[in-house]
Image (cartoon, rainbow, N blue to C red):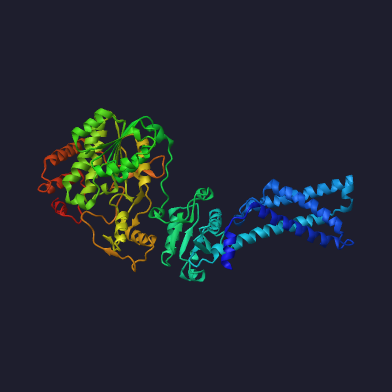
Length: 639
């Protein structure tokens, strides 16, 4: 029997059937109102009732046609459809009253037996029809959802976080989608003005009361769906920390604009990502000056196949550049970026070249032939343990490669040169960070005597970049764990790849030459906490499903990173998240001689036999460089 009902309800009824049912309600309502009114006024006149019924029903039928009250899908009836029904009934009521008054005034012969009309009866009839049509649609919708989806035992019980407009819209969205796989068992919020009120019959609970006991009392919810427009990472992080020990799977619904535009399905309710829990608001830049300054310019991006370089290319290719030149020595990675962007509107203006920034002849030809006016230098080696074992390669690419490109930018009159640096260049404890600091110094030496504006940007770890901790953890989880952490207290600053690339472009506009820009990246993130969050975000439990293993610090690795060196301070810029590091620029000519000496020696050095001498030369240029957990610590003991 239930299947028959379900089959009947699942078919959208023809419009004439809906109209017929509505007219039946109109007729029954008229008969009921007429009898109730006129039995107290001397009795019911059958002939008068029949004529009035015909007149009033005709008027209602015309109004239903005019406003199309029967054209909507009944099981999806919403406020708009109900408003249309009420408007049709009001119009029909007034037309009925006007028709009756005109008829009584003109006294046509064929309507004499229909008198008298009753205004009270017509109003009573309109009220009954309003109730009848509204109730019938609400009842049909409720029956439809109950029979079609309400008895699904496999629906996921969820707690909805968000009792504002977004939460209310999400509630309707979940309950009206034909592929509903969720069942809301409770609604929670963190706004004290909403707590204790009700939404859709559910009492709004304080999110701070979220615990195992609450979940058990409210349908044993398996997931928490976040439905808010204000997605400040601090707010999402708090929600996640409350849900983590229960455990609840935390998911988030797309923004209101997409939801109201009908672009969202329940399958698009996604899990939280680490980016959502960054611990601070995303750095947002919308500077029209960037696009204006880049318009019709020739731009060179080195390291264009890397994490930062490729995202820079993705952002720049959609601007009004005259030409975009992308250089990288990683052939396969460069090919992947080229193919990814081949459908871009301005792809024909781009040129992808395999080459190495430390190749003087190749890079000189690039500058001579294409004459770039802006250079974004993102080419570098960045993996700390590998560079600790291979200082020769680190010096040639990070120092000489940067120095080479900077000198060519000066030689060919580039307008601005932006180098991507790292927080590991601050009080370095490893070869990679130290070589990046030497590269900063090398670029500053060129800036002192050049018309080109040389700018350096420093930021921390980039979420999701090649070889970073996030992809590593994901690979380890795919294998069943454990996640490996070098030290339980290790912390890092994090930012997203789009943030990093926006900031690089913003610094290009902001820079006047010689600045080292640093960014307010909020509080550093504890890697142990990050690992636990990733385990939970993937739907696992720590340590039952995925464990975490402490493996000890790697050569050259710090417990914590810094954005400023000892003795450095900052000055503000027009953007609250961007500052300029005040670095020591004394003895710049002496530093230039040392950088020249290091680069000259590195080009002819033995990669293995001359390791100690190469690192010793770096330490002379960067006196704050103190090796940590490394074979090069003996050099510090000698000094």
